[in-house]
Image (cartoon, rainbow over all chains, first blue to last red; front, side, top):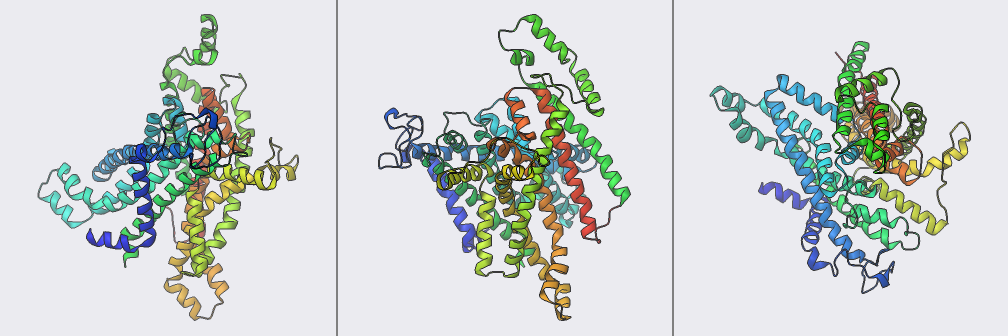
Length: 276
Length: 314
């Protein structure tokens, strides 16, 4: 573990990503302290004003401070990312462990169901689920969680199947260790490396999908300050108030970039082929 | 090989059956009365009953499903709950637009990504390599809707240009058609190019390390021959995998891009269907897109064996 962190720190690209994510987390947690105004407060005499000392990133069409909304937007993005990926990763871990460990008919059933979900482009599946559940923050997280479940299931299943071949597991089975104990104590810790890499990459995917759904008006609903919502609203005014679009776009791109940098770096660090 | 293709085609049947079940029953979970949602609160009980009867909503749910699937099997996707028009002609005409957009985007991404990936791979750790890696990572990290919006803004602010509205078919007027599709395809293509560049670079790097490349070089082959005839062909498998996956992503991406550029494609049909709660349209178009998606994956799998004769299918 110590060696892993040393290598992570020595990989500058991964470190930049890690620091960037840390900054986004700090901004999200300290949003009430960092943001000068409430994200919903309307300064009706200052609509569509450019950046100034009073409004660092300018104001939107309702006179709301874009800086405050961007800062609070980090909360929404991280919340969606963590909860949606949490749902997908937990469900995927359970299904993947069962599928990979027991194989046979259970595996067949689980994997055929996952194949069905793989037959939809991600965004389309998320759209359909949100359409059914109704657009809201909670439903967006559920939809993204469902969309990510098959990827995690397939990944965990194949990792379990390769770990299962090891002799120490055959021995554990031979001396009569309970399957639950084998799965939790012996298999799960050994499949964590690819699982963690996938979580990092899925986080950026979840943030992106939330922004896309909100942009289409089917995710987080106004007046909640999601970056996707801000971007969608600014499309009408962007030609004469470019700052309304510039900051939410930068926030989305930089956050996703940081997650991708860290994900890439972790993948390289944890790949035994590249280790040699 | 033919046996493999046939088996894969047969395997598609349960997957597509599952897809149809998922779409149909998911759309029926929606709380409330679909007829009331469509006709509004002022509708008379007679009008509501008539609409339910017209669309078979008064039947038990499994009968509704069987009726729908029976229709789909014979090429009848049903009628729109809003307009009463047949859905299939609308789906096929709109699919032509989405398909053209997807292929054009894929083409743009290949002409950007594959040469860049090769150059970065050959000139590993050089400034060019670093530049390509940064640009491709940015490409992966910029959502296509953000890129589209910024592009429209930049063109409007600095070149006083706004993208043409409406759609003209390729065979009616190819130049106008390409003018309309170029910007959306460029946006989708660049967002896909990032992933393809990265995959091309890493597969070229992996192949160039192998013994057979050293042997070919030792035999005095020109570098051009080494790269294009040997390295690239072997590197194509992972590149093709990512291209196959990305075409699926592109199909999904068209939903957003068609909305931004007001293109009347299949994605826009799904979105309008969702917004208008026109579920016959949504289930028909989503089933159609899923079908195309799995077919693309199958074609990619078959292409593998063509590119790499070592892969044999049993």
